[in-house]
Length: 117
Image 1 (spheres, rainbow, N blue to C red):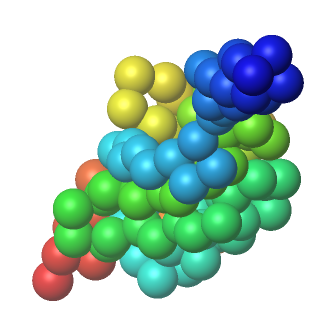
Image 2 (spheres, rainbow, N blue to C red; image 1 turned 180 degrees about the vertical axis):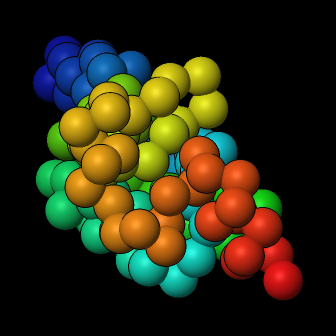
Protein backbone atom coordinates (compact mmCIF):
# COMPACT_ATOMS: atom_id res chain seq x y z
CA UNK A 1 0.00 0.00 0.00
CA UNK A 2 2.86 2.38 0.82
CA UNK A 3 4.34 1.84 -2.63
CA UNK A 4 1.01 2.64 -4.27
CA UNK A 5 0.72 5.92 -2.32
CA UNK A 6 4.30 6.90 -3.18
CA UNK A 7 3.74 6.16 -6.89
CA UNK A 8 0.49 8.15 -6.84
CA UNK A 9 2.24 11.14 -5.24
CA UNK A 10 5.09 10.97 -7.76
CA UNK A 11 2.66 10.93 -10.69
CA UNK A 12 0.69 13.83 -9.25
CA UNK A 13 3.89 15.86 -8.86
CA UNK A 14 4.95 15.07 -12.40
CA UNK A 15 1.59 16.10 -13.83
CA UNK A 16 1.54 19.37 -11.90
CA UNK A 17 4.88 20.47 -13.34
CA UNK A 18 4.30 19.12 -16.85
CA UNK A 19 4.36 21.69 -19.62
CA UNK A 20 2.51 21.70 -22.90
CA UNK A 21 4.46 20.12 -25.73
CA UNK A 22 1.84 21.29 -28.24
CA UNK A 23 1.10 24.84 -27.13
CA UNK A 24 -0.85 26.91 -29.64
CA UNK A 25 -0.64 30.66 -30.11
CA UNK A 26 -1.22 33.33 -32.70
CA UNK A 27 0.52 36.65 -33.23
CA UNK A 28 -0.03 39.64 -35.47
CA UNK A 29 3.01 40.14 -37.71
CA UNK A 30 3.45 42.83 -40.39
CA UNK A 31 4.32 41.90 -43.97
CA UNK A 32 2.92 42.22 -47.49
CA UNK A 33 3.74 39.30 -49.77
CA UNK A 34 4.73 35.69 -50.29
CA UNK A 35 8.39 36.48 -49.69
CA UNK A 36 7.44 37.94 -46.30
CA UNK A 37 5.41 34.80 -45.58
CA UNK A 38 8.40 32.57 -46.33
CA UNK A 39 10.76 34.72 -44.23
CA UNK A 40 8.42 34.88 -41.23
CA UNK A 41 7.66 31.16 -41.27
CA UNK A 42 11.33 30.25 -41.72
CA UNK A 43 12.32 32.45 -38.77
CA UNK A 44 9.79 30.63 -36.60
CA UNK A 45 10.57 27.12 -37.81
CA UNK A 46 14.29 27.71 -37.23
CA UNK A 47 13.50 28.31 -33.57
CA UNK A 48 14.07 25.18 -31.48
CA UNK A 49 10.73 23.81 -30.30
CA UNK A 50 8.52 25.33 -33.01
CA UNK A 51 6.63 22.56 -34.77
CA UNK A 52 4.26 24.52 -37.02
CA UNK A 53 4.13 28.10 -38.27
CA UNK A 54 1.89 29.62 -40.91
CA UNK A 55 1.40 33.31 -41.64
CA UNK A 56 -1.57 34.74 -43.56
CA UNK A 57 -0.88 37.53 -46.05
CA UNK A 58 -4.49 38.74 -45.81
CA UNK A 59 -4.95 38.79 -42.03
CA UNK A 60 -1.28 39.14 -40.91
CA UNK A 61 -1.95 36.38 -38.38
CA UNK A 62 0.86 33.99 -37.52
CA UNK A 63 -0.41 30.69 -36.15
CA UNK A 64 2.02 28.58 -34.14
CA UNK A 65 2.32 25.19 -32.51
CA UNK A 66 5.38 24.88 -30.29
CA UNK A 67 6.81 22.91 -27.39
CA UNK A 68 6.84 25.29 -24.45
CA UNK A 69 9.40 23.10 -22.71
CA UNK A 70 11.90 24.21 -25.38
CA UNK A 71 10.83 27.76 -26.28
CA UNK A 72 8.36 30.52 -25.48
CA UNK A 73 6.50 33.27 -27.32
CA UNK A 74 9.10 35.92 -26.42
CA UNK A 75 11.82 33.86 -28.10
CA UNK A 76 9.69 33.29 -31.20
CA UNK A 77 8.79 37.00 -31.37
CA UNK A 78 12.51 37.81 -31.09
CA UNK A 79 13.25 35.61 -34.11
CA UNK A 80 10.52 37.31 -36.16
CA UNK A 81 11.81 40.75 -35.14
CA UNK A 82 15.36 39.72 -36.06
CA UNK A 83 14.06 38.69 -39.49
CA UNK A 84 12.88 42.29 -39.98
CA UNK A 85 9.15 42.01 -39.33
CA UNK A 86 7.19 43.96 -36.73
CA UNK A 87 5.14 42.05 -34.18
CA UNK A 88 2.10 43.68 -32.62
CA UNK A 89 3.44 46.01 -29.94
CA UNK A 90 7.09 45.76 -31.02
CA UNK A 91 9.03 47.08 -34.00
CA UNK A 92 11.95 45.36 -35.65
CA UNK A 93 15.20 47.30 -35.47
CA UNK A 94 16.03 49.54 -38.41
CA UNK A 95 18.99 47.27 -39.19
CA UNK A 96 16.78 44.16 -39.31
CA UNK A 97 14.11 45.96 -41.37
CA UNK A 98 16.78 47.11 -43.83
CA UNK A 99 17.59 43.46 -44.63
CA UNK A 100 14.15 42.69 -46.09
CA UNK A 101 13.73 42.74 -49.87
CA UNK A 102 12.66 46.12 -51.35
CA UNK A 103 9.25 44.72 -52.35
CA UNK A 104 8.71 43.66 -48.72
CA UNK A 105 9.05 47.13 -47.16
CA UNK A 106 5.69 46.93 -45.38
CA UNK A 107 6.26 50.28 -43.62
CA UNK A 108 6.29 52.07 -47.01
CA UNK A 109 2.74 53.00 -48.06
CA UNK A 110 3.62 52.85 -51.78
CA UNK A 111 4.83 49.26 -51.45
CA UNK A 112 1.69 48.29 -49.51
CA UNK A 113 -0.50 49.96 -52.14
CA UNK A 114 1.35 48.10 -54.93
CA UNK A 115 0.58 44.79 -53.24
CA UNK A 116 -3.10 45.67 -52.76
CA UNK A 117 -3.66 46.28 -56.47
